[in-house]
Length: 152
Image (cartoon, rainbow, N blue to C red; front, side, top):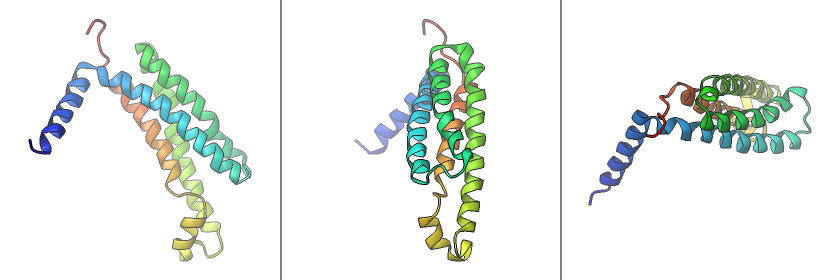
């Protein structure tokens, strides 16, 4: 048995689940779970920084919003079309804003981008806000995927 056989079967299963609409519910639920985990990590990191800026609370508050929207989207087709995309778009926007703020934070460190190697490692995490945007992006994708029909 070649190593590609299980990969091919797995890819076929994913494609079949996307076609039949089962993947939409799973992705909505993954958005909810990812929102909670990401918000918890953000809370710990921003707490370590002393929440020096009120904007640092926004991604922490969006975590429960994403969790509720993700679970609601997994349970209700209507919530998947209405609540989930609004919450997910807010999460993506806040993640992009956080990326900008982290880039600025690195630039404001002594030496700024001229000492990029040191300041990227020791300053605000450069790619962490993009993780938040990725979680929100999963919710946006889930909102546009086809929904499993009842009884399928």
